[in-house]
Length: 139
Image (tube, rainbow, N blue to C red; front, side, top):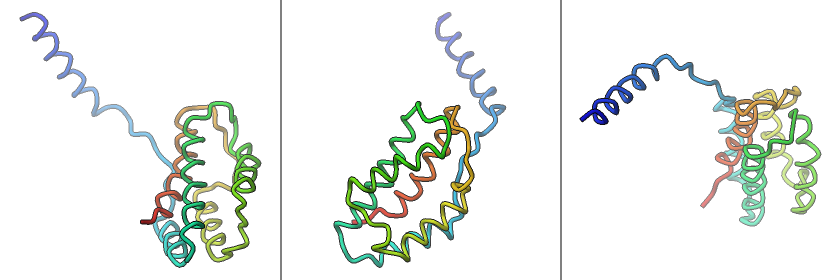
């Protein structure tokens, strides 16, 4: 009986306290920018290229979510460049798509270096690439 009472009081307290926990902000791009990325992406005819693009963004998001060694956003640029090269990806192959992605990245502040010293900062940075992965999913 004591353990049930204690459990009920703990759950009730947690519910009451939960409403006072501040919500964490996440970097979310302008929907029109991700819509533009999706729209231009859908015009790409090659399924192989679409898969490569999706893998680049999804892999980047996964890497950033788990990587603890990066201390600032600008440290990711050389890594992304090496990954693109290893996939044989040429950003100039689809200039309209590259422009749409660039506009999105600027809209979420990717062009401004930011620290990546906290879990929240890493999650926010990862969300930039997760949004791009979601915008480039295809069937």
